[in-house]
Length: 110
Image (cartoon, rainbow, N blue to C red):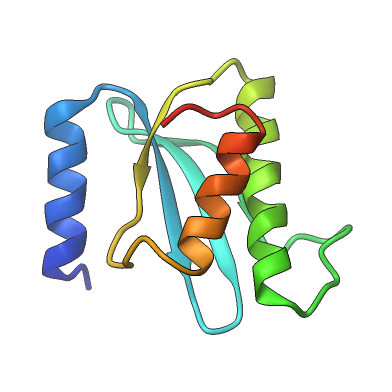
């Protein structure tokens, strides 16, 4: 179920910007990020802590940095440099901020 803050944030993003949306979801154990094209309703790229590979660290802050870095690399590889950041129902601090800052340092603009 989507709560009021999620709806408010998403509607403001769609009203102001035509960019693809970088949506973030955080559970107790994992963090997920995906780039969504709202005009077509498809996911263009995604990254999460569930992926196999170099995500074997238990520190959630380091995992958020890695996910932000991976999503930025995958976006830039597909030619997407500008996105709108959809933080969803979360406040912009903690793991959400770390993920966003990591994606910005890798070259995404939002």
